[in-house]
Image (cartoon, rainbow, N blue to C red; front, side):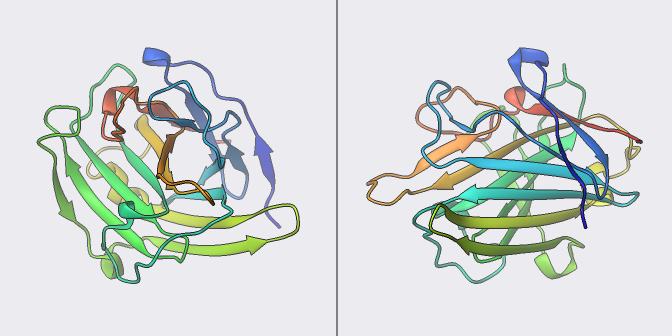
Amino acid sequence: MQTIIILAFVAAVLGAPQLLSSRCPQFTYTTDPFIQTEGSVRALQQTQVGVCHTETYLNFTFVAHDNHIESTFKKCNEPLYEQDVVEIFIAPGKTDEILHDYLELEVSPYGVLFASHIRNPNGVCNGIKGQLIECSTSGIYYSSERYSSPKASGYNVTLNIPKSLVFGDKPHDSPLRTNFFRIDRAKDQPHQEFSCWSTTHTSPPCFHVPKYFGSLKLLNE
């Protein structure tokens, strides 16, 4: 049985949050609500993210409350971001460093993966170039499971990422920058909602603003 703990994050550079990752199987979970990208409104349907790590993997879990799952994609690297999805952007980097290269990973409510190396020279949603990663050879383990009860419904996502894919040729104890995102359309809502762990302060929504990524610290405990 997994041991789970919850730790609050603390303010980091630019007001972005920090999350501490313990050794698996002890997951650390985000504690503050996801908010919309513009920065002042809580997401209608909330998301919680947990993380732990092993010698070779970063393991993430998403708990996405959802009263209306909308996702029709079935194949690797289809445009999952057009419908309901959870996302991780992650790369090695110090808290005062502006990233231009990072990994973008998405998993749909039905367990479909999107994986890409991103080059973002401008730090915003223009001029971005992506290099898709073949899902079957990525070394990423991923799954999704829907749940439903009289009190709540939604889906849980598991995403285990090889450290070699995240860190590249950098040491595996290097500091990490990351952000967690969700795209969702709640029941009876006409528009999609774009929410995040660390707000990107954008309207219209843009997830690709690395200066607002939070930080992830890997503990050896």
